[in-house]
Amino acid sequence: MKHGTLTTDNHAALWHGRFKEGPDAAAVEFETSIYVDERMAMDDIKGSKAHAKMLGETGIISKAESAKIIKGLESIQKDLESGKLKIDYSAEDIHSFIEATLTDRIGEAGKKVHTGRSRNDQIALDERLYLKRVIPEVQDKILNLVNVLAKIAEKNTDTLMPGFTHMQHAQPVTLAHHLCAWAWSLVRDNDRLSDALKRIDYSPLGSGALAGSGLPLNREMVAKELGFKGVTQNSLDSVSDRDYCIEFASCFSLIQMHLSRFCEEIVLWSTTEFGFIDLSEKWSTGSSIMPQKKNPDFAELIRGRTGKVYAQLNSLLTMMKGLPLSYDRDMQEDKEPLFNALDTVASCLTVFTYMIESAKWNKKVMAEGCEGGYLNATDVADYLVRKGMPFRTAHGVSAKAVRLAIDAGCKLEDLCIEEFKSCSDLIDEDIYDFISPRSCVEVRKTTGGPASEKVKQQIKQLKKIGGKK
Ligand code: ARG
Image (cartoon, rainbow, N blue to C red; front, side):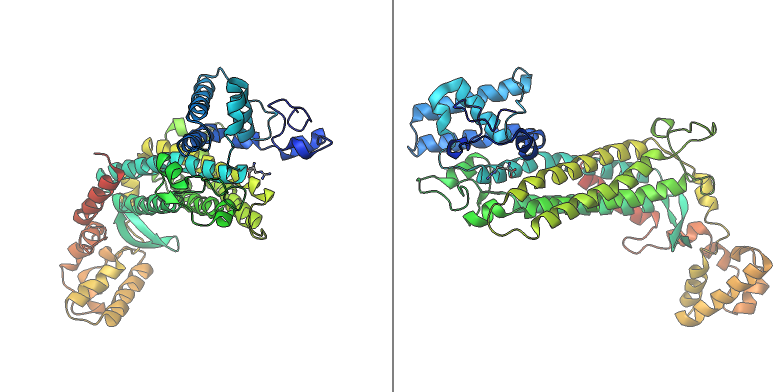
């Protein structure tokens, strides 16, 4: 570990000058963040280039020095990308490594890159740049899944399946309707990310350690160069704000919660008892002892990893709750949970999409699930409502018919017309057509309802949002 040593080497800790003694090796190991923040190397370079450009244009450093710094940073960027330059993990953090490497490469001018800057505003900038870069990749995964669900739905607008409340048979719906329901939750997840992105679109650079700078920095110029909408308005807030980490972790928790609930259904649906779905062998695993097994481990792992994502949100909230203004080193601990939640959500979205895309749907079993569970009892009541009976009375008549059928051990539609008439005179032969599972679905034409014509409208909207044909 080099970064704490008292040397004049460019790679000594950026702050070593006032110390008589270097830190203990264990202290160096304890405080380093480079293993976590290395993933922001490109963002750090991008920010430094914009800062150096501004320093040159405002005359704080010479144009020649500014150009030299930018060239040096570009060479570091290129060499990191090609693998020619390896990260030195003895550096305290990614900022220190890049600054030290720059000075190695271009000499004295490199020592000017940190003019008017602190790592406190630099890290806040790097995080914002990083999130602006990677969140759209997560959004692409969400929209791709929306599109995949819409495509499966398109093929299943007439695939009947039982709808559940309390995990009990409720009313018939279609597979398309059910899949679209999950797709809409993902659409909201995508919107939430877009909304959170709006709030990080302000550059904190120029806030310094906490109190801005006495040098004539042009913060707006840097913000514009980096593609931000504007600059943050209070230097203390700028180096101390980690709301965005919490906000994204919260968005990730919601995405993961949706995936987890959907996975719960997939686990249930792939049981022998349900048998609605047949997962591809590519996205299933077996047992080391029970040769017959095909287990839905991927759905279970996604469901299982949800706890980890929630834990990261909790970790961030707890880390921040007692911090006075402005920067406190505790805040270095923001990145691990943020990145962990991000990585987990991104991989779960990818795997979930493969799993659902490759699954087969047992349409016959699903349709059979609509029989025999009295899912059409509401429709018997609605039939009577259409004939003028008040709904509450009709509910009672239908309940009487259900009771008759339960006692006879048959379906509602197996009751003979006399039995129906014993419940209400208003019931005629046309009841049978009215209460078939297909009719129960097709009659529900309210906006957002399961009738195939309505679901087709949803699918059209979802495909437009998903962005693919
Ligand atoms: N590594 C720190 C972080 O991630 C940034 C550096 C600020 N360090 C400091 N001692 N002021 O928050």
